[in-house]
Image (cartoon, rainbow, N blue to C red; front, side):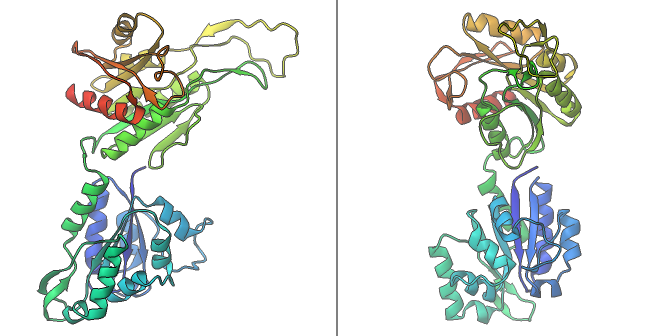
Length: 392
């Protein structure tokens, strides 16, 4: 899954250009959802936008085929950016004055995403004082106006009122949503959180991993234009929207999921804390005993399994150590066939499980060693991505 652009299309001859807007966003890797006004369907069919976006087009507020979730709210929350192109004088006036009487305007009112307005109309309409005032009102309220251009209009008049070109509209929004698109075209497989190994019907073995570092990495890849497959064990933080999530429980489940998704990935970041051991036998019922003795067996080593078959793919692993940090982490780098190991001493304050910060040393297969100061995990995520690109 990807960042989502909601495109509002209103009743104007320039609506045909909105097809190109959808196509360009799709090529850049965005998910596009289209909301049309009833008048817009007189210029371009729903089917055109559904074919280009591969998503259902919404028109009617009370569509009997709508999704169960309140649609204008769900689309408002889904939006990374909201663009209305073309925006007629009518819809500009309604939004400027707080009128929400159809699916498009109600969704705009509900969104917290940045909203881009692309006016398109006859020159005389564009220059009308009421329209001018409404556009200024929108600017004051924080809406972003991608202004009309001058030229020959569909009515034959020459002047300002042409909708901005699709290439310019998409470029402006793309720069806002993805200012550093250096992972565009790449799919990054990230493991996050802790696995659990059942003892009996109610108990299990696990560890303190929260999944925060894995989530931070997923957010960083998305912000830089990449696609994310997030194989998530037990986590205590919300998973980011816009990623493909595969939920797992045990270490063997995680290995199976990683193996299945490996061919779809360009980079693998093993950020999870899978349980190293599991009980040899799992009781079907809750064990009731004064003394509980467990025989543990070794779980498969997911990182090493990936390192053995990754080929040209980049593999990043994490090493949570309590002593001899560089020596132990360097050994793991070589033993598991990784390209980068992110080593951290979990005994240091601000570097342990569940924190919002980390203190890491990046060790690369090319011999580069980079000790880092304590920093937020989201900031560390970008440093890790930078080092991946430096190895290419």
